Image (cartoon, rainbow, N blue to C red; front, side, top):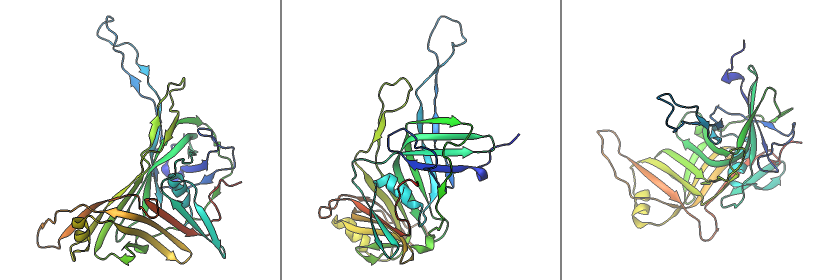
Length: 318
């Protein structure tokens, strides 16, 4: 009897044209991932009825909740799918076979996804439909694998004994490394950065209406948020002065493999709190700034993500 193993698991994804309705077979892509907790659960409500002795009556099923996280690589090609899920469709331009995809914050409508998580040895193929990206988060540091966590809210799940995704298209995986990263402040490299953490959130609002299937009606984006932390060796007053003065600055988080392979997220107006400067021994002093981004009054948006690669578009493969 076969046992499910993560090494054989696969994740297929397609954008929906109708919320909660999985697209037809052969319009899905195989997506690289490191782990997934995406799925649905239906808890049981314990009986509160009295008069039948000490042993309880049978429990009652509650509503279905579908959500979870997927850990994915930040790479040159497939990363654009998750950016589209979080920000909406990009503005794409081409120059001699090199495509620049520009994603902007503030979209009122976000695309929904159908995601099939398959374990073929059982076989068990769970199609999660109506999935909307709630959060994207990742950490920059000196070394290690570069991954991001995608948080999703979904409408529901259906389980099949065979894949409904059909023949899968796929991207050749070409990953960015931590050593490809840099952080800039107002266009100038920011020195002495030990680590940086970035979280973009759509703050989705689940629409919990009365339905006969126990599922949500949808998930609507609310006020977005872009927050994070920057940990630096305390070597100058640049960030501390900004925090004390209360003025915003632009922060750019960037990964570059070549002129035709790059990703950057620009937070146009970042505000810093004044941190403590703890001295914890003879080693160097480090300061941690828990920053928040806001809408830039000139550009009219909070952030811009730009992915440069050889992918023409991020529509479903045909």
